[in-house]
Length: 257
Image (cartoon, rainbow, N blue to C red; front, side, top):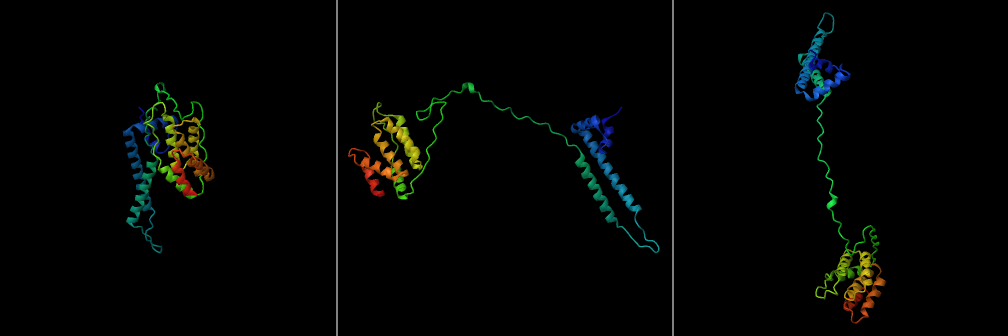
């Protein structure tokens, strides 16, 4: 009965084709015993090749003769040549050996998020309604007057967080307070245009409780961009004796004028 092992020599010599070659390669990929048999067979062929080479070299050695040139080959040189042939043959056949193909290990299936339980959060008062694009932030262009920028930075740094917790619930507006505090942070980050947009929205609400805070910060936002317009806004505060930031406006004008 024909065995897969009968095709070892034909496989090594590259004589297998078609379905027979596919069958042998499939068996070789999973049969450890067959892999060892192929390796032993290749080793034997390599040794036989080295032996034949050694015999051929011996036969072709030129021995000293009368009137002819003398030529000898040392045993060490012969052994080295045979060893090189053996190594070369072993490397060649090893490269020709089909390596077992490892089956692909499927990774974990991607987790599909369950959107059925996702609850859409209501928009915050500062965010646009769902489905509408958020307006682009205005471009920032600072004045080149370093003295003005330094004076503004000092004025903003002295500002504390606005929180009218001591006022009545009817007057306190958490949304406006958040907008004012965001404007303070933007001014500290040297983003007066974005801060000005927030403050402009606060001023349009015309809430008397926060009007003076918004006017002071609004003047600073313009002073950092356009000192001329910022100074005019500070002078308006200076001319109001009852304004809570009147002394701040006077001191800042003295620094920059």
